[in-house]
Image (tube, rainbow over the protein chains, first blue to last red):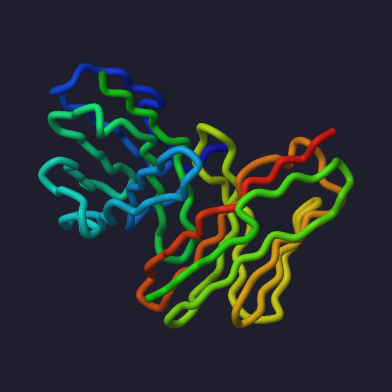
Amino acid sequence: GAVVSQHPSWVICKSGTSVKIECRSLDFQATTMFWYRQFPKQSLMLMATSNEGSKATYEQGVEKDKFLINHASLTLSTLTVTSAHPEDSSFYICSASDRVQPQHFGDGTRLSIL
Amino acid sequence: EDQVTQSPEALRLQEGESSSLNCSYTVSGLRGLFWYRQDPGKGPEFLFTLYSAGEEKEKERLKATLTKKESFLHITAPKPEDSATYLCAVRNNNNDMRFGAGTRLTVKP
């Protein structure tokens, strides 16, 4: 069964709105959660790493004010894309790890901004 | 800087035609090499972790091997349902992960 649940799986919204994506670890306590972005036929691009109870660490070039990450508990992290624009359209994937287990991934969220 | 290079970029096989996917890596202190399978529109699904040179893991038609510089994912007698993108990743001694670009495998019936 799914170890990491990501919701929603598909979002279509108008330009300028904010979108929240949830990532839940179902079977273990995820001390670390990761957020990735993936373009068609390309590999995963790490956006940020979040440790429970602390601020997320963003990769170079990722706007922290645009992609707000909250990791308030050991089982839940959220990514909010603020004031989304068409160029933010992408496939966003989260993963969870307790730094011993391999990363387990959610099924991703396809975000389409009109 | 850690690097992961996967080859080939794409591979087309006939059903039953065995082959291997390559993952070459450089990493500052290997803390694990991971293989994942990703189907279109889905998140990666964990397959194997290898920790040290000489280690091998098997699962159904897949076998992963590891040396100090590369890993191979051997696919024996593949079936169409094995078609997917296979991703390789390494974890370094800072617990940072780096993914390769993947190999898109297509198995034709």
